[in-house]
Length: 221
Ligand SMILES: O=C(O)c1ccccc1N[C@@H]1O[C@H](COP(=O)(O)O)[C@@H](O)[C@H]1O
Image (cartoon, rainbow, N blue to C red; front, side, top):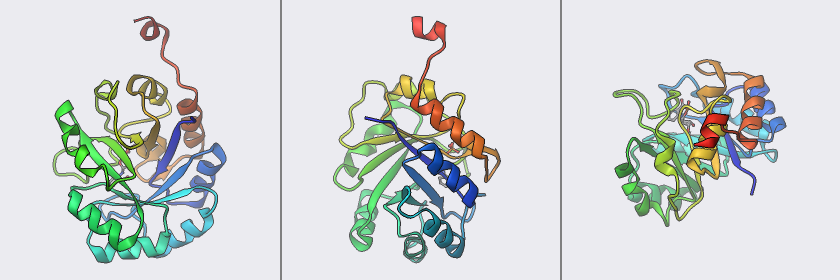
């Protein structure tokens, strides 16, 4: 099956079009006031209308209240709601039941022990997402920080999953091979500055992700 690719933090129609042209499966729109990719409801509605039917839409929030979530969902009418904060299984289940939307649940990973909370989301999340832990005191994602992908090698999960955190055109092929990921998600690795997506980097990312390679030395070991 083709690798699933999500381009996250899209905030302009040229990068949205570049993601579709390059064959991305999902585009994420971020609602997190501390993020350089944060969208107003109005801007999100217009981007979502531009993209609808061409790619799956994802609304990303992190520990947001119901009012913010309701507004973000009404603006985007997404295929998935991505929970990128400390949402508990109970909170995630309540959101799923209230809003009737498929869920992506993000888990911050630094060691094997960080996979422990995943099991409790089996019947709640439709997709899992494994991201690096954010630097202390900062927002929970979108920092371009990677974790040790080998922690994922050989692990089985009851849901499909996406690898995220510090991916870029230069490292995504290696990340896919070392982790065995069925899907990947990128934000800052296809930007020239925080919140500024680059159409060429988006195309390069899709190409590198779907044609993964190791360098010669690594392939021999
Ligand atoms: O992109 C953001 O600004 C963001 C804000 C709050 C929570 C998550 C966010 N982004 C997600 O973080 C991961 C990794 O991003 P990166 O590729 O390392 O920049 C990814 O899932 C983004 O969607």
